[in-house]
Image 1 (cartoon, rainbow, N blue to C red):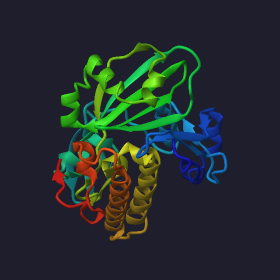
Image 2 (image 1 turned 90 degrees about the vertical axis):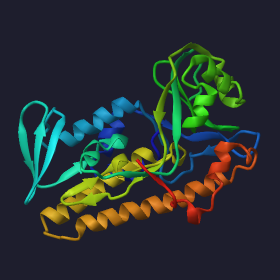
Image 3 (image 1 turned 45 degrees about the vertical axis):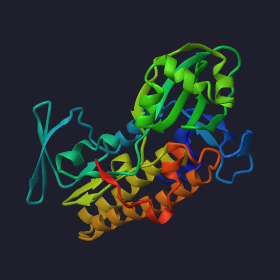
Length: 323
C-alpha cells in the first residue's frame, strides 16, 4: 500500500501522469483494531493529499526502476569489489568489467551490501519480523487494508490482484520462533487469535508457505562518508506500521541526489555531511513517533512484544545494537 504522500513525490519527479497510467487501484479507507476491541475505519475520501494506492510491489518497483533508467546508464552486474581512489572509487563487477565512480550511493535496501563492504554498520532498534504469506481467496475480495493488534504483535492483510491476498503477522524474531510462525500450523494458530483478520482468512482457498522477512527499525550509524551515501532502506528502515516505507525511501533517494549534485557539481564539501545529519534527524523523529504509537496500546501491556515498546521516547534511540 502506497501512502497518499507518494503523490507529491511523483509529481516532483515528473512521474505522476505515468503513475496514473499504470491504473493502480486507489484505496479510500483503512480498517484498524489497535487499542480497542472494535474495528475503526479511517476514511480518506476527504483527504486533501488523495487516496492510498494498492500496488503490486514487484510491478511498481520494476516500473519506477525503468523510469529511472531513462536518465542513467544501466549496468546489469553485481558489485564484486570497491576500491577507494584519490578522487572517487574503482568498481569491479562480477561480469569482469571495471568502472570509475566519482561517488557511490548504496540503495541496496536492508542488505546494505555496499555499506557493509566499507565497514559501515547500522543500529537496530528492534527485532521485528514479518511472517508473510499470500493466499488465493474465494468469493468477493475486501479491498481495504486491515490492521489488527493481538497479544504478541499485530497483523495486516491487503487484497492483491487476481483474487489474491497477503496476510502478515508482525512480531519479534524470538516470539516468532515460539509461535512457530515459519510453519503453516503455527502461522494459522497465531492467525486464529485475531478476530477481524481471521474472519477474512476464512475465505482462503489456497495458502502459500509462510516465510519470515526482517522488518525492524534500523538506521545507518553513518549515512555518508568519503564520496559515499546510503539512501532508502540502506540509510534507515522504518517499521511497516508507519505506513510510509516506500515514500520515505523515495524521499531519501531524492535528498541523496541533491547532496550528490551539490557535492560533485557545486563543489560543496559539506553537502554529504548535511545529508547524513538529515538522515539522523529523520530517524530520531520517527523513533519518537513510533514509541508513542506502540505505547498507546494498553490491552496487552504486560506481554513481551508490547512491554518492549513501552519505553520513553527520549530513550528510544539509546542502547541500540549494531548490525
